[in-house]
Length: 186
Image (cartoon, rainbow, N blue to C red; front, side):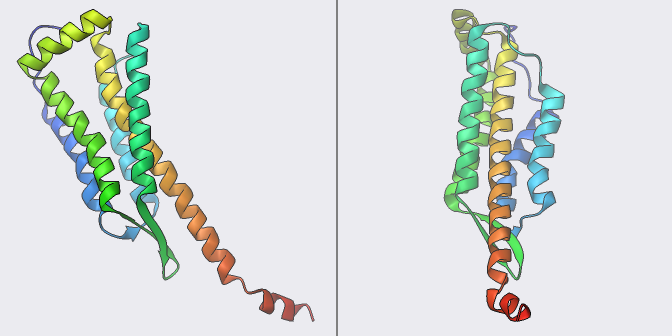
């Protein structure tokens, strides 16, 4: 880490704001389809491609990444579990509740706030002191907040996919009428 703060680029801002703004799409009841499931995954995949530096070489750097990724997974599970999933005219629909949106904003917002703080002169000074004291390389911080977002997005997406499949399966089971099937066997 150098002693000069880095300036967040337009790519940094647009990636963070896009991930944060996804909550607005989630608040409206929408078909739970491929686009709705893959859009957040594509955004974090692009972020990983642009920002992933390297795996940390210190144990503390690895612990930082494991810790932030775990926080992301927990927040993603909360966002996925607190999202309403149901069928409407035979189509699986999902809509984030206020609590699901809060979990999403907490994770994505915390990342943005950390980046703004780390890119300020006082934040960078403190971050250098923390990194030096705990032997954490600078690349671990970048990867930690990146993998926090990945954990959050992947956990939410997997949970919504599973819940959507379950709702679809329940719809298929309830649509099958045993009396009609038995009448055909007479």
